[in-house]
Image (cartoon, rainbow, N blue to C red; front, top):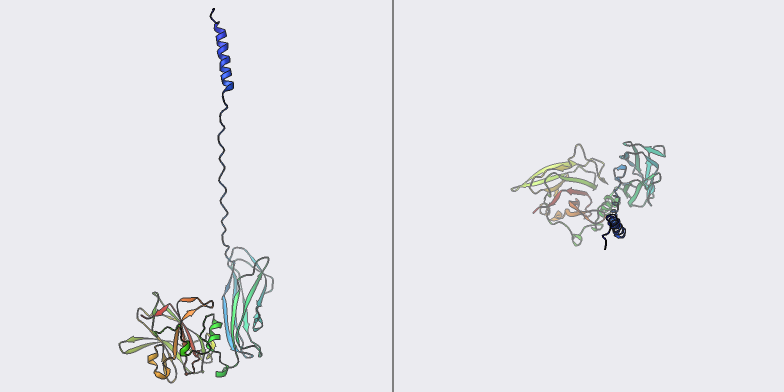
Length: 336
């Protein structure tokens, strides 16, 4: 056999190579990987642009006689203007309260701008005695209402003993929970803190506030005392102003003190009357007035105990009403 010409071999090889290339499997395309889903948008709580101060107002007085007012300030703390369409008092007992000093409405509050108005308390002569509640409603444009200002008032029938309120509505008006009833007897002393001495719960000042007084309009003062051996060391804190004997949050004469630093030593509370002094330790009052002061954990309107706070109620004349003086103590615990 004659050898295959070189040129034919080359063509054949080229053909074979061509066939080989044609029949080779196509390259595998790269696998597609799915892109990760975008992160969920963060839901940030928007800060309320309107600030209302104070958040609560408290009033008290005799129906048909009482006339008083308090100021409320509404401030735009945001970075955009806020439209206020209306300002009104709402609630079933809204008629007990009145708004005055209103700006022209609707009102556009620019950033950092504020407006102040007056809330008056003037219960009509036929108003029902007891706790009256309402709230200031801020109507905004196209949004939910702005933050409210809550109002509570204690309406009484007179300033004599028969017209005085019992302890329960006093505490209800102030927003403190209690089941003490109209009077506190030995049978209703459950929950009472047995110790008449206190010490601070945390380092720092203790707050002592007189939040109600319903007694005779006589000179009286109050304060704290400590024990130095067999001696009592007293520290006056304040005297209630004349004419503020039938009211919530009575005013003090001069510059009354509402906070003090007791250090680590235990202390008690005293009320000095014209003829005698009452102490938070019952044994210091004698048998006839042994329970002139009672101490309870302070509870909010919902019933939760307020941390490191106590309620001190005083009965100065032995009729067991325990609303002659009502104090709150803050940053305290019973002395060990």
